[in-house]
Length: 138
Image (cartoon, rainbow, N blue to C red; front, side, top):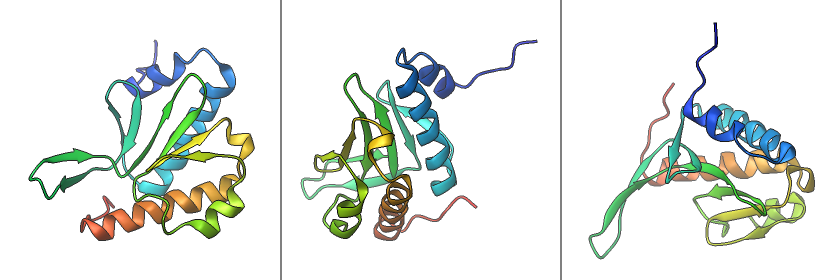
């Protein structure tokens, strides 16, 4: 009897590049452990954990995930939603990466110190939970 696969497992299993596929499953487990949240697919191919509601000064509001990742053709994107302003020391120890406003672009998990990446994700999630008064699931 075939075991039921989640939509997330299907999404990640369909990544052609074996190394990227394995790294996505590593990120999936890492973020499940850090957030204690169930993953959810956002915008087609982003895997997000937890949620928060935001309201801009303009009145525009929405919902987004606390952290997540997205496999892209050229790299992996890890979402450090709190941004990078507070994390210069951690980033100096991380390895090879590029950043956007809340995107950490990695060519490979092998290019970074996984323990530093965990700490970066943990700190960002903790900061977001404090900022938006979010209780943990457990």
